[in-house]
Amino acid sequence: MKSIIKIFRYFIKYSKLTIARQMQYRLNFFLSTTIALVGTSIGPLIQLLIVTNTRGYPGWTLEQVFLFQGILLFTSGFSNMLFGNVKNHIIGLVRKGDLDVLLLKPIPTIGTIISSGFNLEQLGSIFAGLWLIIWASLKLNIVLSPLMLIAFFIAILSGIIIHMAINIIFSAIAVKIVFTGRLAEIFHAISGFANYPLELFPKAVQIVFLFLIPFAVMVYIPTRVLLGHISINIITIFAVSIMFFLISLLIWIKSIRKYSSAGG
Amino acid sequence: MLKNKKVRIFKKLIAMHFQIFLNYKWGFLITLFIVPIYMLVDFLVFKAIYSHNGNNIILGYNLKQMVWYFICVRFTYQLIWNFTDQSLSNKIISGDLLIDLLKPVSVSTIELTHAISLRLAGVLFEFIPGLILYSLIYFPDFLTPLSLLRFLSVILFSFLLYFKLNYLVGTLAFYTKNNSSFIAIKNIIFGFCGGALIPLDFLPQVAQKVLHYLPFEYIFYWPIQFFLNRELVNLDLWLKTIFIQFLWVIILSIASRLSYNSALKHFCAVG
Image (tube, rainbow over all chains, first blue to last red; front, side, top):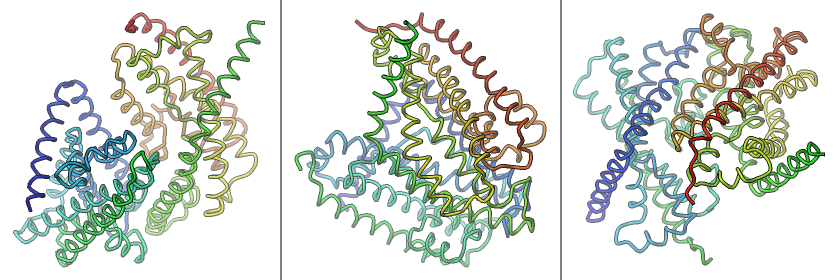
């Protein structure tokens, strides 16, 4: 428990420093946030073009697709705000040999690494996502019941836990293979499955991305909850995300035990 | 005599840069693992869309052509991509541009040789093995030797267009030092207006007409049309595309030269 509090404090301090650093270059910050906003808005625009030029996705109306896209932008923006810099941070640590310094600190190394991921530039994506969620919810006449709200919160939390686990697995692999040139791209490619409604994929793929590599939990489940499908066992989904997180920690522990630094 | 010397330097620089990129062959080869994952996602998503649409053709593309459209986007990047814009910015910030300015060849030539050797490695480790591997996974039965040749010929000009536009963005670093925001904007514009994110056929007619007057679609969209061997493709269109690309290369060459000459006055290195 003490370690968790220490990590949380570290996260707050590091985040404050990051904000202060980014505010030193306000024009660059403003431009980066605007670009993130414009860049992330391209996704919904492409979905609009696909849906209006075809009959869309089976079982999904345009408004529902927008709701899905809004949650995609919001969760990815929020998770990237919390952990966006982790990948670059760990790559830098491994390359420069600075990981050794972290190993000597009195808090869990992976906690320190994960706490160093804060990136405020994702605000644009979060706002774009929120706007889309509100717009689609109004169009779909979604009325939030307290139960739906709790389920939605758990679903979002599960997504953030999975996002954190993905970053831990990435860090574990980065420590192990050192050569990390395009590792992030592999993760990005696999997470592509989470960017579409699960119904588009065969049953086997759905099971894989719900329970084995639960990327679909990040967007699909919160969307289904808002659409009134609370029958999805949200507690199971939460348990899956916790399991995935624990597995990622095991992978990290196994990887760091074999870490040999620059001396071999 | 002087021309021969310049050609020799040009060749030497390409060989030298290529040698450096050879060290990163595994970085290039990872593409062969990444692209099939994207292929699978695109295939499953579009299979569901086509099936739901109840039609074998959407906007003139069958399912196979649609999936290969996005593979071709990656091929195009593998054949044209360079980071001249970033490179110029880095050199201006670090002051290394000063060393380039003392060399007997222009900065633009150095960057061009860098881009050429980078893409030679891309052809060797990404494009050729990729074309073979992805064809084995999902055979492109629409592809003929002629359509492949047309694609490759058009892509040469796409490379030059992309390089010139990148160089132009790179010159902005003389004013701003860090041009990462401009690069990000450029990537969004290139991707969307060039047809790298979605085939331009999905855009409204008005937008398509406007894009005809801009260079971006000649970087991605048109080369891909030749690869996909679509019905609209013929000899006239091929010649027309090359001609327009050539014109754009000339226009952008002049623009980047003017921009560089004017921007260089703002360069100041410590020491």
